[in-house]
Length: 319
Image 1: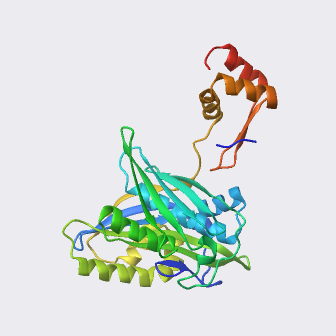
Image 2: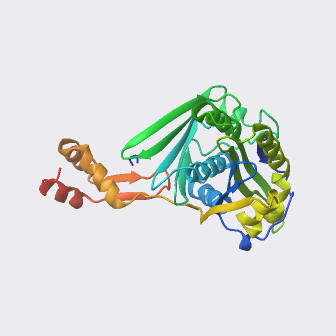
Image 3: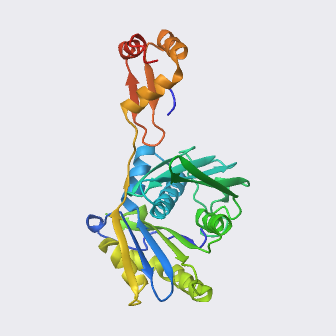
């Protein structure tokens, strides 16, 4: 609250596909390839990416990187257990300045970028996001382990590509080779190019004891086929995408649930934050401002707590 690409990231070619939007929905599907001993997680995030863009009024580059980060948060959330959350943060010296997203095991994701006005999306090469992210920065992941215990790990931005630097994070933090696809494919909608035409993420990780050569080959195949399969099958849902990508008979879907962009903020949370300020600071706020205002960074909802409510909090002795 506050007061008052380069593979494995695909950005398709404008006009590269047309899809029926009415048939598409955001969801996460995870499964196992039993013979290959690999876990596969797919997130379709087109609608929530567009909702985030509309909520924060983000320019093209900011919208693109926010959609990638939200997709990554959905994938990371699927790796969590119980009712826990995972946060992903990027800090950088480029014009974007950074971003913050989080996701949970229910499919709820939220997030924001520090500078919503960044427009330049770069070319389709290894330096695509360097003008946006800059020359120095880091990526951090904070995992809720339950019972008030948290684990935080960071890597320096080296590729300046969210998918590739997240692969490095998994390798360095979890000692787990991973293949990550973050796809943003423009399509034609009523004669106009929609830059967030199909947005999706795909995470492949080996299980203990898996053959790494088989894993590497599978990862390359998924990278190669992802764009065409998503454009063809995304409208039919995540299971259809995975069946097309993984025709192997040993693939088994383990879980499937909807994804959505939303927030847990509320007026009660704002009031609790006011209580945490302490009596003296709250009295000073009342005298100077006459009321309290707070805007949620995640969903841009603005809350106004009237002066009489604050006086009631002071008189009740709860502060």
